[in-house]
Length: 139
Image (cartoon, rainbow, N blue to C red; front, top):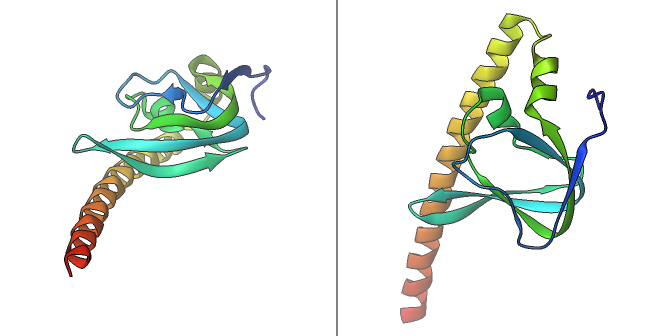
């Protein structure tokens, strides 16, 4: 890991909220043990975007773009995470050339847009399944 300090360790139990959609981002996280569900609210409904496992990172988009959280993250079972603090992260990113930082920011913006679109598609798929299910149960 390129960070010179041992990460701050946090532990969560099943169902605990680690990150809440819409709040300001201050940290990124690496899953040291366990797994988490990533969800996004679309039309007041929570849509599962992804399940992340040991070794995967979340919260990085907010650190890079310095924006609010685009999704919520909840522990599945017992979870141990390492916290990558903004100050540490900014120290490393500040060493990147400006053009590389611009590319990374563009990628984050595109990923955020894609996540939003996939969430909307997921909601439409769920609605379609419900219609098909209600139709097939009537016949």
